[in-house]
Amino acid sequence: NAGVTQTPKFQVLKTGQSMTLQCAQDMNHEYMSWYRQDPGMGLRLIHYSVGAGITDQGEVPNGYNVSRSTTEDFPLRLLSAAPSQTSVYFCASSDRAGGPAETQYFGPGTRLLVL
Amino acid sequence: GENVEQHPSTLSVQEGDSAVIKCTYSDSASNYFPWYKQELGKRPQLIIDIRSNVGEKKDQRIAVTLNKTAKHFSLHITETQPEDSAVYFCAAGYGQNFVFGPGTRLSVLP
Image (cartoon, rainbow over all chains, first blue to last red):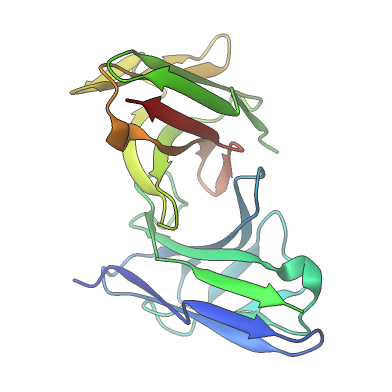
């Protein structure tokens, strides 16, 4: 099992560019989520999904889109990058369709710098 | 929604001493309280968790206590070692309503 994988590890964007952060898990987990981590602010939920075809907004969804066409993949799209989106992004998955009230497994993270 | 506070934000202890990190939460419906450890440049990893029907849970040098009446829970690390140095996050919630605290940077001094 590879667990939760994320690509790329590091990305530099210019303001206004778009990109997709990839996330995949091979544990057949129903629940997947995206967090951003900023210094002193912990992990903040961007979007989550409780299964293929179902997504919902978290605490800080503005500027991001997600889709869940398969159980394994949960890409995060930045529509028009802004410097405020400079952060470390973590994808996570959990074997509980109702939410993360079981162990969440995190990916290695993507460090994004928006100039 | 849920709001989680965590104290202290930084903590330095001598190797061998104990460390305690405290979290409070706001939503009485929360029933799951995990603790994650994040080493520098690495992903968060679960170290221990507790559910609302349990008051205390231990795993070797790590323990978590929960007081649902007061809406707070704490992480206790005994006999600290240099490899315990990391950022620790608490979290609280139920179902999809799940929030992390801002983190505590623990430094264990040799």
